[in-house]
Image (cartoon, rainbow, N blue to C red; front, side):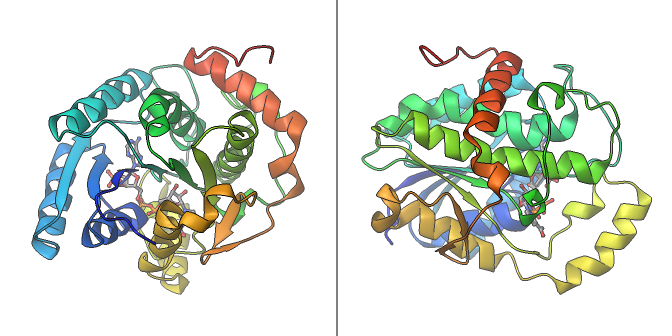
Length: 292
Ligand SMILES: NC(=O)c1ccc[n+]([C@@H]2O[C@H](COP(=O)([O-])OP(=O)(O)OC[C@H]3O[C@@H](n4cnc5c(N)ncnc54)[C@H](OP(=O)(O)O)[C@@H]3O)[C@@H](O)[C@H]2O)c1
């Protein structure tokens, strides 16, 4: 696995799995662009990585991925940042940022926030960065999913505004969508040099369940998270998929501990993947693939 001088964008790099992945990628000699939603946390993360890995090139950009306007601006800033460093290609995009909502809250684009941040943001950002990823000899799009996707089904056309809202169900739907997106991306880009993967990080000791979750879920997560592994564990799988030449032609979509894993049947259901893709294009204003 060689990450030296590879350009890698990692969303949600201010905490948890994303921060660890950014740190490990920096140690491995990659050119790292971290993304966070809060400027102060971005600066703290940048400083920590620069202290722990003094030779690293690490830049942080701020964007709230709940806002499609900010995702568009982020993509432009990524392109500019690469150009400023004489780089014309992006090798790896890690769609890691994710959250769990205790309440149904709509984004400024009128979309339920879990679905917007956990699925539509990776969908849109990947499309906006595709021209740069396509210039890499082996572009990779790695989206952090979850075993929560098992035993989940949904109606893509209703994900924008689910009738009955349960935080856990919205989260499960978004994580199923991550794998469906990776599956359909590879089907649509079978001849291209860019390949998509989804990662199961396992149960990881982070603060994800203690943010916008509500008091009860926060209490449950506080004790449950201690059973989780350190973020270093999923970081290894993410960076394995980012840099391992042997996986570039792999047909395996879902990965855990650097090995392929069987996702749920729904996660590779062609009809469901197509409906989700169509709905995602509609909600993000992207064009459908020709003849779709
Ligand atoms: N922890 C687990 O056990 C576990 C298990 C399965 C899957 N996952 C997945 O792993 C990924 C990372 O989760 P984690 O556990 O590392 O959580 P975390 O510690 O809470 O980190 C999440 C990251 O995403 C950022 N983020 C959240 N909402 C955002 C938004 N609207 N715009 C931009 N950035 C945003 C957070 O920023 P702030 O620092 O500002 O909060 C943080 O940097 C998620 O996709 C999650 O679904 C986690």
